[in-house]
Length: 290
Ligand SMILES: Nc1ncnc2c1ncn2[C@@H]1O[C@H](COP(=O)(O)OP(=O)(O)OP(=O)(O)O)[C@@H](O)[C@H]1O
Image (cartoon, rainbow, N blue to C red; front, side, top):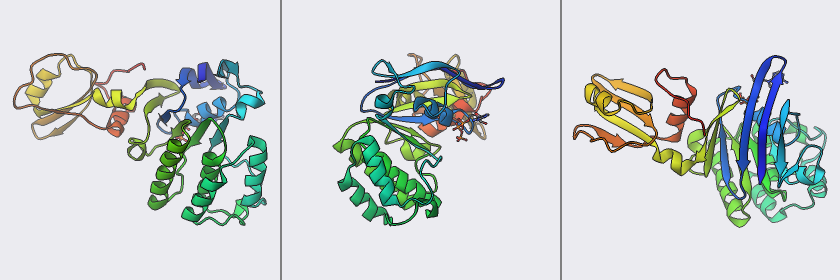
């Protein structure tokens, strides 16, 4: 288990991460969502000891990961930041990484190399943005780590390559279950992949739950404006749409046993819509702590 306890980070007087507590369990796929500047990369860099928190700690199996090579070796962070020398050939980076992490899944790598058509004789610094991501994704999926942490994994990948990557991720997870943390803005693309969703907003966790539970609490209530308003009175309305005098109120939370008028329709809405409402500071919204 990977635990983040009371982690905060400030730059000068600016608070970027504020008292974050999280527990990443074994063999789950987490989606870490947040608007630009919410603090996602900062949090992932703190988890992997690339930057120091101002306070708090990160532990794996109750041991602090800071300066702890055996625990840090259990995580791989794939991010925009390039850790490899521009002049190094991809095949050499694989060899070096295999030594550092004590293994490499060559069978899967060969499959991905062929599928993505990547030339392993190329120099790292010469890769296009998309192929730079593809190469780091191969490392992320093939190194023998327990926590695969992907910060904007599909940056620069075309739609075909993104589909291919999601398929490879799920196949690799099925073959070898481990914990994934995916930070992304492409919510619709990962909604069916992730098991749990974490929303970070201005450095704070505002939602941390299994996707299934979250979706079960989304309700769109559509009908005549006055009837919809009456039905949703006192519920947690996080957003609305108007089409003439037809109103859609979006509720996040449990419904009580109030009677639904025949003319009002009830259905669920998707994760991306919920994300937009919860992070938009919509005037009618309430904050949801975990
Ligand atoms: N070294 C730094 N010095 C000062 N401020 C920083 C530093 N690094 C990050 N920040 C600030 O911290 C905040 C969070 O940045 P971070 O990169 O973690 O956000 P993010 O959620 O990953 O954003 P995005 O989705 O845009 O990549 C931003 O306001 C950013 O400007």
